[in-house]
Length: 101
Image 1 (cartoon, helix red, strand yellow):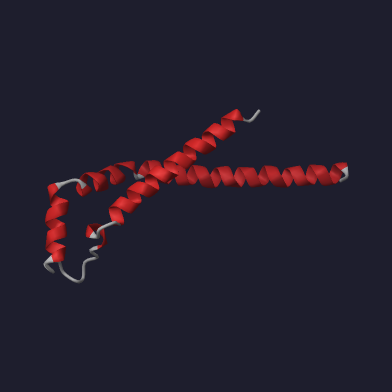
Image 2: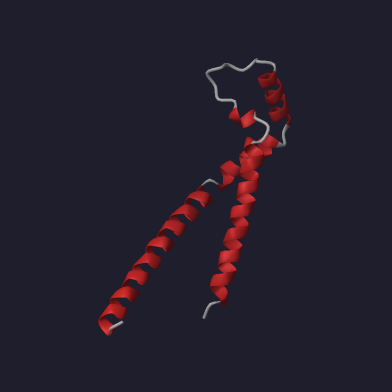
C-alpha cells in the first residue's frame, strides 16, 4: 500500500468512526430523553393498575380499537430484558474502549 493509499484508507476509517459515534450519540440522546417514560412504564408494570387492566383485557372489556399489547404477557418484560442487555453491551463496549491505548 502506498502512502497516499494508506492516508486515504485511514481517512475513510476516520470518517466511518465519526459517523458511528454520531449515530451512537444520537441514540443515547434519545434513550436519555425517554428515561422517565421507561420508568413510568416499569412503574405501571408493577402497579395494581396493570393487573386491573390485564384482567379487563382478559375479560374482553377493552375496546378492540385500542392496542392491548401493553397488557400482553411479555411485552413490557421483553423491553426490560432488552434494556438490561443493551446496558450491558454499552458497559462492555465502554470498557473495551477505555482499555485501548
